Length: 91
Image 1 (tube, rainbow, N blue to C red):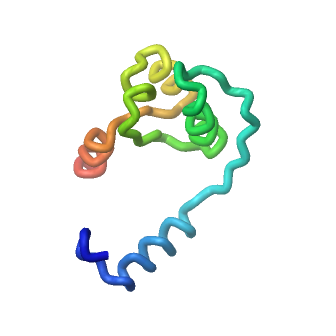
Image 2: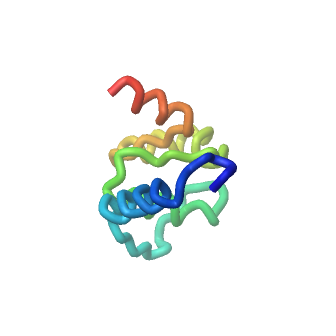
């Protein structure tokens, strides 16, 4: 990919890493806590997949304080991409 200056080998290595670290999650469609119902499946995926973080650029998710608090109570922190990169940098 010339836009990101990644070789085919690097891309394949990233894909392999993602596959090894991924968890397959089936969602039921029963969670209804987001003001945009099309985003509920993401929240459900994070919960059922045991995620510690839901990294997003979607304002419906990261700026809804009730939603982020509820997700935090269930063990999932909803963070922006920059917040997550900052967390990675400090670990």
